[in-house]
Length: 213
Image (cartoon, rainbow, N blue to C red):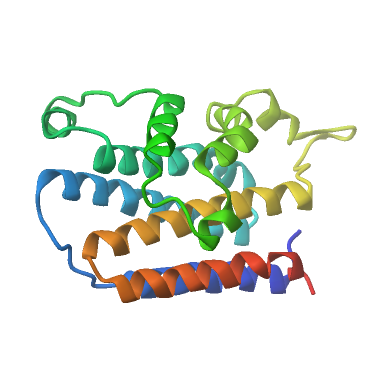
């Protein structure tokens, strides 16, 4: 499926993001920071798992994880930037549900906090990512028609994933992993690390067209 170069490129980027925030300390330990930070870590763990699954060509599970990775990241941003302290406490203690994904993204982008700059332009806005891949991702997670079609061929039941589709999933997932890593770095208050991650994002996504070379 993917070439050794394409897999290596993805794995190296995931490892670089992990190293960049390894052992970072939070600048504050209030509930809002802890809850949003936990969401970002979960999103990043899902991203890393997707890269590993793609490397092993376990595509159904890789696809199924995308929606939860994206939602974990968006929830983290919304809880940090938009939710009040009372809601955050109820989220922790009473499992209170945040708004629907469209509402969270709309509120975040209306505030326009932390989503500008060349690094973010290269990976697309939250609404762009959502519009491009959210609808099919729901079917991937819940075994909808598109997920099943990837296993039906003229010969019967067998893997039928196209390379360009897997690369699209990988690219979308990397955008979430990069955003989540940036968010964790921002919670630490270390601007130098955040700037290093932003540069790595810019370089990585600029070079995406060279995959497979």
